[in-house]
Length: 236
Image (tube, rainbow, N blue to C red; front, side):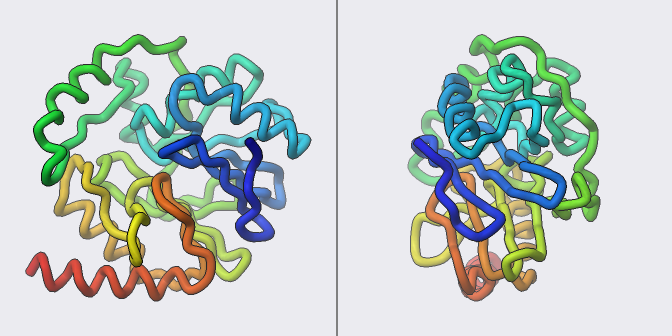
C-alpha cells in the first residue's frame, strides 16, 4: 500500500473508505489527515517507501472525526510531531473531546444516536498534542493556505496551494462519489456545509481531493461550480 502520485506535489494514500494525503512542499513533507485507529502501520510503511521518517513530517488534521485523526497517536508514538488543527478542534481535544457530533441525512438518520454514542465512549490512545493554528487565511508551514469550511464539522478546514495549477484539499467539506462533488450526507450544520461548499466552488483550482471519494485531477473548479449552481436551485 503506497501513496499514489496525483500531481507533482500531491499524492494520496487510500485507507479503505477514507484517504490521507502527502503534500511534498518546499520545506518538507506535510501529511494531511491520518485515517482511523489502526491505520498507523499502513501510513508509516507508505511514508517509508517515500523515504520519509515520522520526525520529518508536518501534520494537519482537517477536522476532529475519528476517521481523519484516529491514527495520530500511533504516528506520534513512532516520532511524528504534534498535529495542527483548527482552534475549535484544538480546544475540543484539550477538553478530552475526540469526536465532534454528526447528523445523518436521509436513510442514514436512524443510526445517528447509536454511532455518536459509540464514538463518544470508545477507547482512545494517549492524549495527542495539538497546535491552535488554522485561522481562516493563515498559511501553514509557509505552504498551505487555510480555508475555514465549517458544516460537516464545525471546526473543519480545507487547504489550498497554488502549485500544479491549484490544489484544493477539501477534507469532508465535499465528497466525490458521483459526476460532481457534493456536500457530505453527514453534517453538524447543513446550512454551514452548503455555504462552505459554495465558497470552495468560487475558487479557481485545477485539482481537488477529498476525504471520501475519487480525486478530481484537472478542471476541478468546473465540476464544483456546476454542483454549486444546483445546490442554489435546491436550497432557495
